[in-house]
Image 1 (cartoon, rainbow over the protein chains, first blue to last red):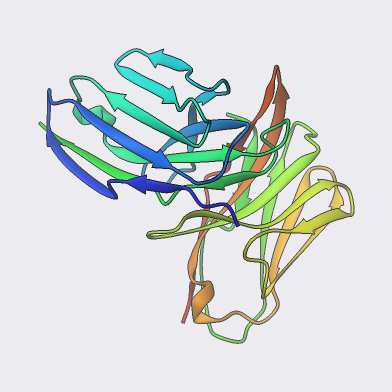
Image 2 (image 1 turned 45 degrees about the vertical axis):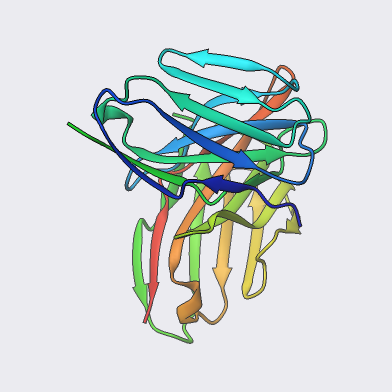
Length: 112
Length: 114
């Protein structure tokens, strides 16, 4: 069984602060996806990273895939209350992302 | 919006009763999934389907069965519900695109087994 460990599990910060969420595994993944989930809704894809060392930016969010494709990080700059939510990483094996292994999630709360 | 609906959205049932959850998609995607989400566990795959009548087990399939008689519908059945199956259940589809697929999720069904 492939495991993805996310840290921290909970994070509460003030508006304007920066934060980083980590996703680590001993397994190699062909790609890694980050999702954001709001209460009462399903997860929504934020980004997919495929290449080792890849960095993708989505406005104030920066995603990095580790060189060995075993870990990833999500960095948020100048967090806003609208960033509040559950952030999930998910690793895929094989050539597609048809089967995903999810991390346990990071619950982020950004206080105004 | 990937055209995924789940029904019911909320259900309370008693231990030992059968329960069926329905996932419906409008875009004829081949791959469909059922996950459960519990605090501290993220999303765990129960079963998935890769076509009509083609299904396979996921990580936590014990106590669950699935059926897919039409492309658009994927049913999850708890033959005899137990309290440990209290959870939020999500259906997902996989959409092919570029170098990798993307999974889109339904709104979820909150199931409580008393």
